Amino acid sequence: MNYEGVLTKMQTENGSPIQYYLVFENDFLNVNQLLDKKISINFLRYQCLNCGLQKKIYRQGYCYDCFYSIPQAADWVINPEKSKAHLGIEERDLDYEKRVQLQPHVVYLANSSSIKVGVTRKTQIPTRWIDQGAHEAIEIVEVPNRYLAGITEVALKDHLSDKTNWRSMLKNDIKDEDLALWRNNLRQYIPAEAAEYFIENNVETNLQFPVLQYPLKPKTLNLEKSPFYEGVLKGIKGQYLLFADDTVFNVRGNEGYVVSITVN
Image (tube, rainbow, N blue to C red):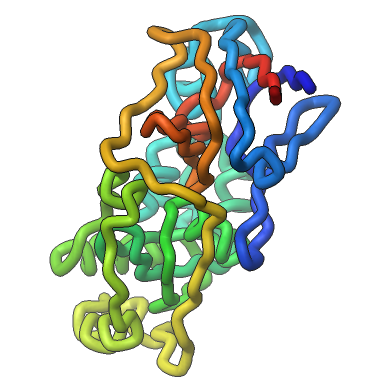
């Protein structure tokens, strides 16, 4: 079987285990069905996810020109505390910024390599946690806009990380934590503007990833340096494909790359 298309982040369905799908323009692939099978990945060319042109990908699946012009890649996306739509101030496209920023957002704790704090739109729960490879997570506050979530995250970052150690996450070098206890202990650091939105009576969500074998020493597949790779798929976690030889492939990190995938 052969599949060809431009890579975008895998779509997911929460379950036991989580189901993963690679979606192309005219086809899709249930990646879970490929576990224990030999597959090959062949890098063909670039295709910007915004303009569709065959231009070298700069970041997040976009070419250089699109990355510095479209609202989907503006600074507030990575740094939500810089959101200004609630003030009616435009950064790149106010209509788009209002649609995305002025909706319920959640500040959460997720345990993927260690406990980290993060922000996402309410509609992206639990997708965001799955993409980060978190085996457990819990909401702390639910606020009406992205700015309030952003300033809450900044305040909590003084007391725990906002980063994931991807190697530890992929090796499954993790331990269970009492996230409800962490949530309650962090309540005192929530900014006054967001304090009324604290969530008191929720429980953590546990996630199960389809992994048969975790890598001992993960090594990243770089399609630019190694445009052809073949290996036996042993697992899927976060947005990574895990192979028997400890090679790991970050699908989301290769958005905008057109590939051919062959299942042997």
